[in-house]
Image (cartoon, rainbow, N blue to C red; front, side, top):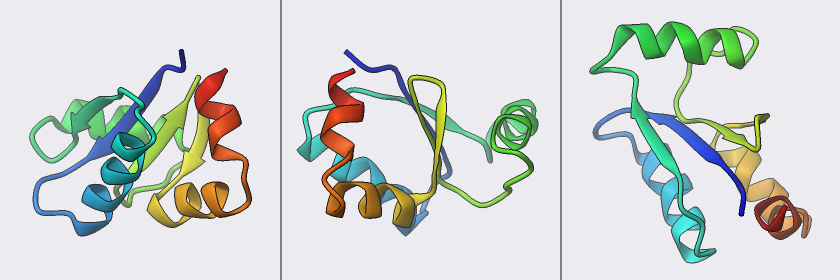
Length: 85
């Protein structure tokens, strides 16, 4: 099973959409609220190469990007393979 981390924040519609897709796929994930924990915001920026927008999604340590990137992977038929790894 994949290890998934979603850096997110409250009231973020893109975060909600990304989490909804992962839930529909039956994937469990760790959610980290970067607004409540500034140290995790710094961690997210380091891991993502400086990206500051949320969500930032990682699957098995690989930076996927944001919500649109996650949906693009799904549309291309590549998300299921990542989730199954």
